[in-house]
Length: 469
Image (cartoon, rainbow, N blue to C red):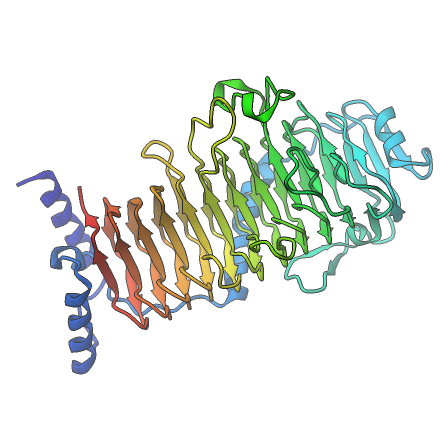
């Protein structure tokens, strides 16, 4: 017996042990319909027997959010240093008239505390300094934010940096420059009204610029900024050279970009809510991202995006009502004399994604991942996607496990000209197409325990693709 046959036999025994045999509890007409659709779908009988017959009952969005935020908190807390900042406390406006003058006077380990008010400044952060809004007078009490599910501290909403008096430049509301590390913390501010940026100019500003830096950004509210809300990029050794002559390979990185972005609300940006570019690998944990889109006349942008070798870890976020899609990643267009030499490969886990328009899917990757570094879509909760709930396409290589997809505009999960190393234990219901689609040269290496119930099309469709080694 071949190794593949042994694996399929073992998996079949496991599925039998975990649930009732195929068709149990079905009415005769339901069984006939399913069997006819299964035959039309083209998936081999030996593979169908490895899938689940359970009825799919998604959690409510509220319950899914509780699961997501718990996962985000567990991931975030070990990454935030709560012991380092024991130096001087510099107060604004008490000791300093401006926030920037206090930052300039601080050294690593110091805390700059900012009182309530609106400050018309663009800031440049310093390594090892903590910038925090004043928590006096109930500042840590949680407050509602219009249109959001997350709550933020009152101090966040009353301590505002406003960019409306500045002009478009390469400077965001805060610049985190090359070499800034994890002991640099910004905690509890509203950032708003960065002027509209020209997105066609390399190095254009974002609401918060994370360039070759790895700060902690937490408890902040970004709204109505004229660019991507938070943008992440590494810095290369030849950063000042013309784009056409640049070396964008991994070995040419001078400063990595591995920020922790935790418990923020990012809304109404002109562009992505959070963008990850050029090998950046931020930890994006427990944020709410909504209402972000592109300038009129351009295709709308998703809530979060990754390209050019980026490898963000995206856990426990709430991503909704972004007209260009939810959490998307892709290879990225060729650039420079030496192009990106490692694939984009995000880890997208335990996020709640819903209502993100009809232009793109909820969670998808086009052209990213590899057998060694696959894209990972694990345990997400997806509701009312305009197109597919989850998708791999254009040669992407990924793992899709334990997701629940409800109410997609096309298929629930689609593998198209791509490879799924694992497609296991996903549940799909309410799709306007088939539950699972594997088409146009797609390959699925391992496929076990998936359930599809209450969809407009067959449970599984295989057309021009392959399941198994």
